[in-house]
Amino acid sequence: MGVAEYGICAALPEPLQVELPTVAEFAREFPLTSLVKLRIEIERELRMLVEETGLPERPLSIGATLAELERSGRAPRNVRKFQSALAELNRAALGIDVDANAASQAADVAARFLADLRAMRAGGVE
Image: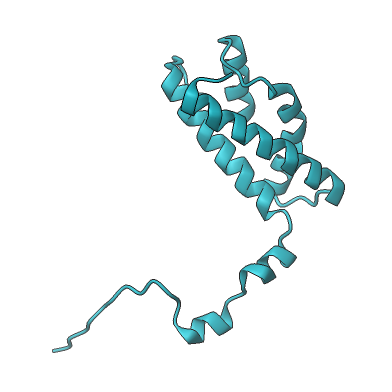
């Protein structure tokens, strides 16, 4: 008969910390991770916005969601600018290299768009 005890630990054990890459190493190796994270957060906010506005259909892609919000007159004010940056976010999500300047510009635009989405949801600002 065998007996085992399992526990959950908030921190990684020391041997694993040495073996796994640090956040800084990930940032160096995967510079587009921030674009992918922004894309995911924007997609989540858009999905919640669509649910809150009661639109009949929930499009699956960011582009289709933005188009539906535009048709209903509920799109954020800088949707056109964000759509131009979306191509870079999609490239990053697909693991395709993005020019450093284009990535930086896309990150700035996406961060402002995300802030606008959150403001819309929080206070109804468009």
